Image 1 (cartoon, helix red, strand yellow):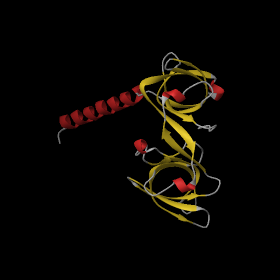
Image 2 (cartoon, one colour):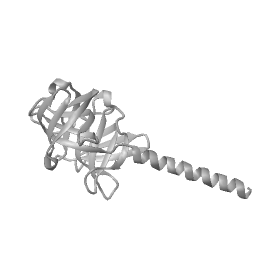
Image 3 (cartoon, one colour):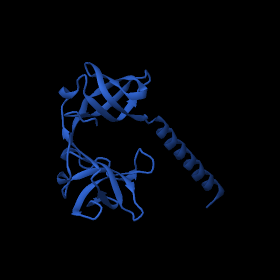
Image 4 (cartoon, one colour):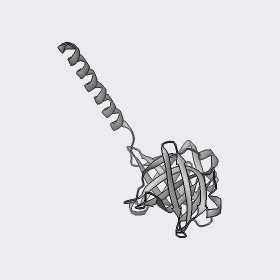
Length: 203
């Protein structure tokens, strides 16, 4: 390979790297917002978001709304697609802290295994393969595209389910959770999905 060719390849690699960095920098950053709805103005919610105070969130025209309802171990059946927030155990298994059973239309959402948003915890979104009783609780084997995990579900695990909801549920007093809200230049937020608690549940 000649010196000129090497220079051209190095230059092309540098340009490609800068293009990727620029694209990443331009991607909007998202944040998680949760709290009760204070007010509604058309498609804009005012949410009392904890330490952040009152924030305004504009819903996109096609925003999806999902209700969050109570569920039980009996609802975790083979074939269900679930999200498990858990604490890793020494033997490689995961002890469930919280399990969310996804609605069928959400199947495949965030599939995989990764760190959760709490220290020293993991999140696994996967399909239930088998579930059997174990010494420390129910043992649930889940599979995702790159592997599988053994989940221990003790009596202290919080189990909830998503159900398809509607924008009619978004009213003052309702507790909501927005997983990915995009902050706009004017300080407001935009969201394409809202989870709303039903029957007193705080999602």
